[in-house]
Image (tube, rainbow, N blue to C red; front, side):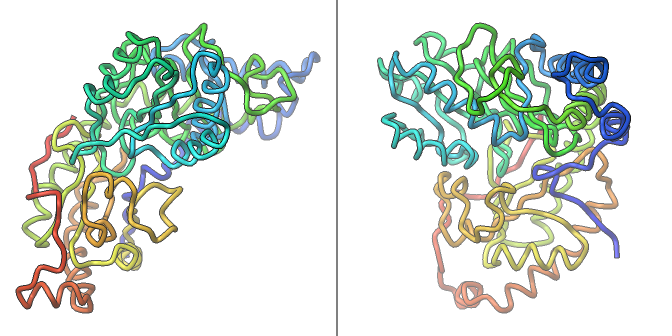
Length: 407
């Protein structure tokens, strides 16, 4: 049976070059980078080399890079760290309705700590309206967090415009770029964001390393205290091997991103063009133009999402229905619900995130296997039975299918 991996948003295979970069710090160079003796020198140098490699990928100053253990930790450091560091200026925070749960869950804690949090609605494509953000900012607003691109639907936000609005009003702007880095070029200097998050997995690096970019001069309170690592902004002995692997992976990603992006665009274009002819009642989600390459998101009506994923897995195809942090909750995606999609339709979601190594043969295999899987699952669906009887089991609020163009 052929094996096809379409779940790169949740995890990517680690580049061989990244593994090679990690290896010395798992055996020979075992010293603590904080040590003053010679055993600490190679690990310390590896961290600084990785800092430079990562900074070049996003056009940042090396000193603006803070290493963490995951994008979730980076998001927590950004939101809580900035909120508490600047609470003397105000206690109002704005986040979008489709943020990753590592942002949304924090808002509960921040509310209990006396902050007022506004959740900004998105349009049917999942985009934040810059004018609505402008209208939502108050005199006591200190921080806005809007992701660069969405994990589940691929929609790219007008981050440069949103950040400019915040800058005009003296408000800090953070963006979660975990879904964007490794798929589109990212230049934090051009975006002029104050903080930016992404993980090693974004660039075919190892789990256990991530980054928070923090614009020089911006104050932030540490979440983890007890040491001077990362200039006191993130205490604790560094995961040297993972950081070294992330640095090398970031370097390679920067060198090859253009070609990878072109291949993902071409393959995803095939899926958008050929799927509707193979399976009826598919609703593509996310913005039709301003979207990530290689991210194909859809709802397949009258099919239960979990059963669809398990059936695809039985056929050797790995896919998803949301982010890794919510995939096992068996709830309708908060992202799809925020678009105005009917709850029952949202539970039929399918997310394909292609990677640099996917091929036309992978697309052919998926297109060949999916119709029979959908047909079998629909045959036992009471919603589909009602549809065949001429009834309307639910109202889809997203409108007709739309053509997609890739970045």
